[in-house]
Each structure stands twice: as C-alpha cells, then as structure tokens.
Length: 169
Image 1 (tube, rainbow, N blue to C red):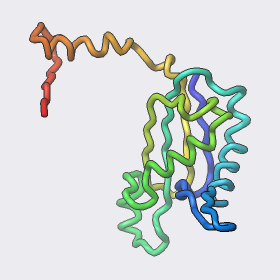
Image 2 (spheres, rainbow, N blue to C red):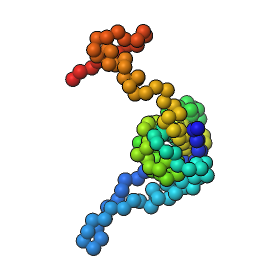
Image 3 (cartoon, helix red, strand yellow):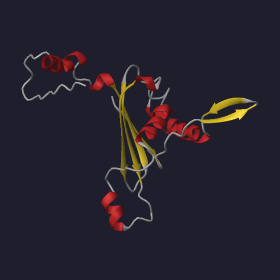
Image 4 (spheres, one colour):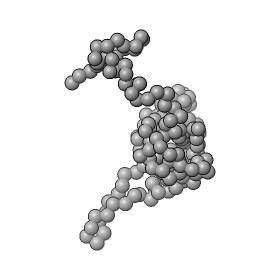
C-alpha cells in the first residue's frame, strides 16, 4: 500500500514567492527554480503512482545531503548517517516535495494528514518519499486514542502503564 520513490540528486528547498512591479501593479510569481525542481520530482515519481490516492495520506520524506568536500575525513566520517542540521530548513524541503506530488501521489496536498521530514548526511545525495494511505496505518480511531486522556482528565481509572499529565495554562 505504501509507495516509495527515490529522487537522486541534492535535496532542494522551496524558494519563497517573489514579487515585482509591472505596469504599476505588484505581481507575485513562483521562482523558476521551484518550477524546475517540482517538474523533476513529478516526472521521476509519476510512473510509480498509477493514480492519485483518495482520502487522507501520510508522507515521510528522508533528504540525504553530502558533506562538503572541504571537511576533514574525521569530520566527514562522524557526520555520515547522522542528522543534517544546516540549511535548507526541513519544512521547505518537505513543501517542495509535497507540492510536486499534487495530482500525482494525491489529488491535493491538503490530503496530507501526517508528515515527517528527516534530514541526514550521506555520501549519496537523494530524497526518498513515502506516501501511505492513512487508513493503512491507522490502527485505532481518534475516539479510542482520546479515551485514556478523557479518563485522566475526569479522574477515572487510566490504562495500566500509561502516564498522562494534564498541563493547564
């Protein structure tokens, strides 16, 4: 049920919209770099999605960045496989990927009920995108998930081994 796509190359972030004045009017446009990157993801991922998923989906994105060539062997070895904590920001990488899959993996990215974006160091730059229908991973309804919280708030018995702390502001 899960579809996983690997996009080779350096992960890119979605650039901010640009604005200019033309004919005395402000015009906002999507930078060309966004259009090129989204088209590339869509063209590489498209064949793996026979039709867009219907309903809620879960998206997991793993972005892999290569350490700089100027890094020492020791620093490089220590970083590989570890978390990438530099620019680009995780949300901008995720936004570009999710926007690119509109109409391909799902009808609209508004269907994404849950998303995780991880950034890692690796010798092989790439982006791995997993899309799973939400129904395939949801093991219990939200009402059941909220039951222990309801019991704790109301002073009822709580399930064994569950610690719930109610924080009030």
